[in-house]
Length: 271
Image (tube, rainbow, N blue to C red; front, side):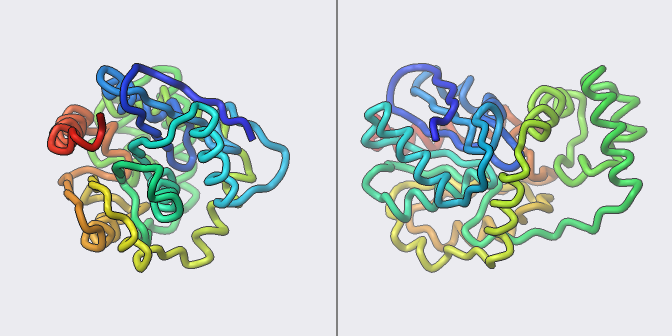
């Protein structure tokens, strides 16, 4: 599978992996900044965005695709950043191919992911559809946020329901959702239903790691991200208050400052 990939900048390579549903463009909040000093690669995973498929696939296929992507650009070593599902894939890459990666950044992700998302009712879905449509037409409209957004499923994705956050939702979240294949939904459900747990394997990871999480995350709880951080040998954890699963779109400036600081501390690994 040839992945569609967005490449920016020059320098030490960073592989940036999106979540579910998502696409490489969802990582723009990171790649637009990181590409000033690094070369970023943000692919659309199989079954997402512009990487179309007509056949079922599994998590294993994602890993094969990503290694082939690195090989095709003759990348022998890189840093990997993964958001949500992308973080799970990043962990798998580090566990299976430790010599290919010099560092790891986990964003709203965990080796043993837990969620505490409430059950979804009719009005949740109704308000989500209306909020999404109106936000597409008029991104960041405060009336829409107050009337429908705060009553929609968006309230479990973002805690700080501000116009700037809703601009990100309009530009990236909704288009990515519409382009996510049913095979992608099925592959993720198979992973979750299998009781995915890689905590025992984290001892194999020896590179510098950064774990970022939001206290209000209902999809992959902050507790599960913190549990992952405790199992990693050389790890720095940042837990952001009043922030949820999409916290890089809620507090991008703070997240990027913390990421820059961590990169500077481990500069010898990424040159």
